[in-house]
Length: 64
Image 1 (cartoon, one colour):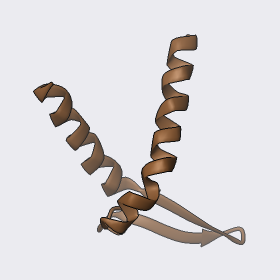
Image 2 (tube, helix red, strand yellow):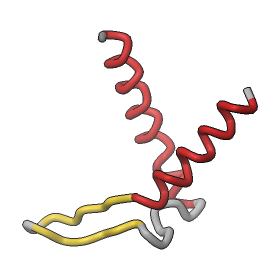
Image 3 (cartoon, one colour):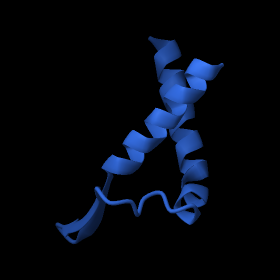
């Protein structure tokens, strides 16, 4: 259980570090990524970006 918590924590840290780089590359602005305002706050659901990045990670995992 603690191993999964560490993996999730490290994944979230990596995502937060690479977010500016990915945004410069165009991720987060793909068709299917949803931005909306609700309750006085802007919400962002990167559906297409998540699918593309998981496919890339899967391909890398299969190659290695």
